[in-house]
Image 1 (spheres, rainbow, N blue to C red):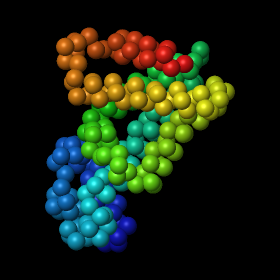
Image 2: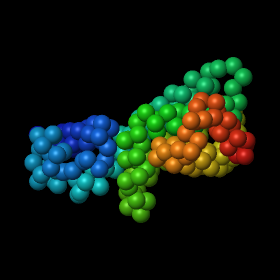
Image 3: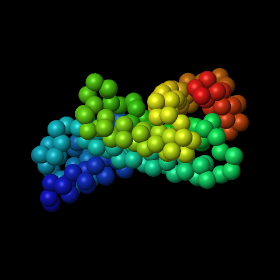
Image 4: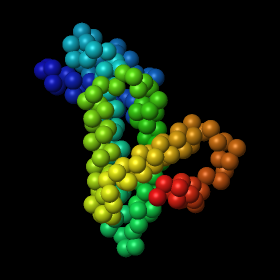
Length: 194
């Protein structure tokens, strides 16, 4: 098998395994067996499992942002759309991804340290963030600096609440978390940003 095919096969099998069972269940021995690849073949393609994880997480980032951009474009096709309703749509899309793809979301945000991020990985994330910003800039004709600042804070807010929801850190009020609560929360947060 060619190196490019081995790499693609390992990434796909790792992504599927993480999606189904979560990152803690993934190891090189399992992955090479699943990918019909030797352990040596794995290390010819990837430095270590963390190196592989950046590639796997890129696939998850692509899925997340593809869904977010699709939701945003759908929102922008509706009448009476505002920046606020667009941000609420983005927030709900992010929360939906975190909840419906919990293992992928945790792999993205809970297993990799910030210090070790390769430059290509950071650029991939920035590219996706910028594409969302550009959609908003073009539609609402708002200065790039304002959108960038708003979106940066917005991602922090949404990520924070996603982490709380996903890790069930607010179990005391778990019974009131529904669509109305999420709309209220997102609306309240966005009011402080725009």
